[in-house]
Image 1 (cartoon, rainbow, N blue to C red):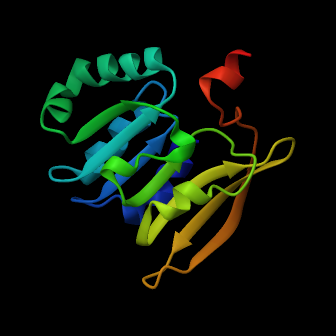
Image 2: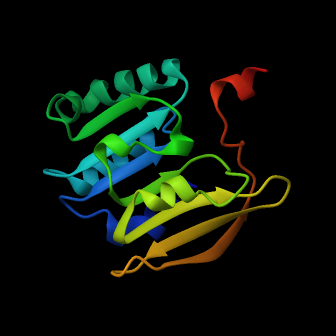
Length: 159
């Protein structure tokens, strides 16, 4: 799935671009995207599980500590469903868990001429690619049937 995400987002992962990776997990895809937007881009990885954010930092540090030190990658503990306004807007957004509904808050953080890759649905899920044109109009295309874990907060995940 990471390869599909990179393929659909490739033209939005150029040097200097800003990227949001929601549900960044182990940091693997965050690092792949950083390699594509370096040297002066920004990739923000966000996850609501602090232990996963810590794992991401450890994994990235193992071979590319300078990406964290220079600010190429920022790892954030927070509710990815709300995005990360502090560093936005973004040229592209990747979401690694299924949203039950259209992700309005994330769409609002997408730059004009930006793209988002996100699974949507509960029982039946599709990867949707949202594209915002230069005037801010949004189109969406279903590109692939999938099964992802739900996009949720820590309380809903535990309780």
